[in-house]
Amino acid sequence: MVRTGSASVAAGPTLAVVAREAGVSVPTASKVVNGREDVAPETRRRVTEALDRLGYVRRPRFDAAKTPGLVDLVVHSLDTSWSGAVLHGVEAAAHDAGLEVVVSAGLTRTRGGRPERGWLDKLTARGSSGVLFNLAELTASQYAWLEQHRIPFVMIDPVLEPPPGVVSVGAANWHGGVTATEHLLALGHERVAVVAGHQRKMCSNARVAGYRSALASAGIRHRPEYVRHAGFDESVAHRRMLDLLDLPEPPTAVFVCSDRMTLGVYQALAERGLSVPDDMSVVGFDDLPEARWISPALTTVRQPLSEMAATALRLLVRMMDGDRPESTRTELSTRLVERSSTAGPRDRSPC
Image (cartoon, rainbow, N blue to C red; front, side, top):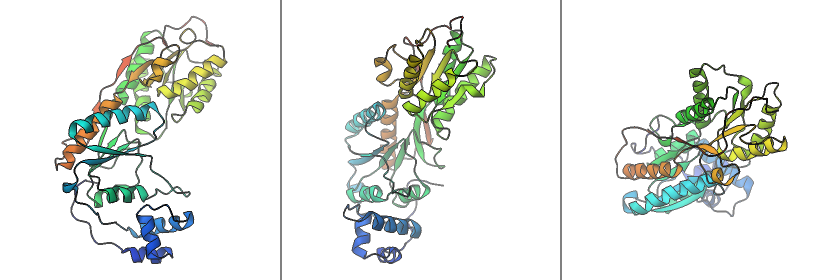
């Protein structure tokens, strides 16, 4: 079980042992540990693998009690509206708490797919008192590293189910899937498809489960061919929508599990000469700015991204003060925002 704030860490291998294992000098191993860039990729790989293999733990250089004003935010990327909403929420809550935030984009991986330790060691070196992870998929060794260093952390919308004891904040994704599907059913659609995200991602599975639950409650048979996974990728969503349109009995409505994927869905419909919502009703998920910009404006399920981020920051502050939240999982409510992309089905087939 992973718990923040556990007992002291047992002594591990020294840097000299790591250097010997990797076949490099101690100064070179030190450069890798400290995140220096002047190390050859192959050398960095050998040292990183030795660090992980031997379970090397860098001793903290800081006393968190003396540096309470700095926290890290690790986001999946910085080039999306999603990350902008998360940054806005963290920034506002951090300002209220008198904290400064260091932002890192993604968890760097080596050529072999192993997580790079540099960002972890930089975290220690700069004396951050806590970490927020957004859309992160941490490895067991990374969880252990944070535990060993007694660094409080909170997950914002984790990719996978976190280990027991890890604090996370997310949205009511199952309820959002139910709401989106019920809206389409209420308009008279019975052939409702879903363009989902990653099959292995928590939020995607919950939204699809909500979709299926709504169909079952309405007494409508679930059609496996109506469920298409697009990995939250716009171009893949475009292909999946074309696949749905090519079915012998295509849907008349589609629930798309992210606003960004609806851009690909809209493109596929336009290529086939179909209009939204006359030929196909579309509901998204997120309520990002894109939902209002596209034409017709998108009916979507709003998840409170900024509020989720602010809630996570406030939980982190409590943990930095030594207070353990009563519940490890906090879910904020979702709601449907109706715009112009949904209407009742036409009598004729859309294709």
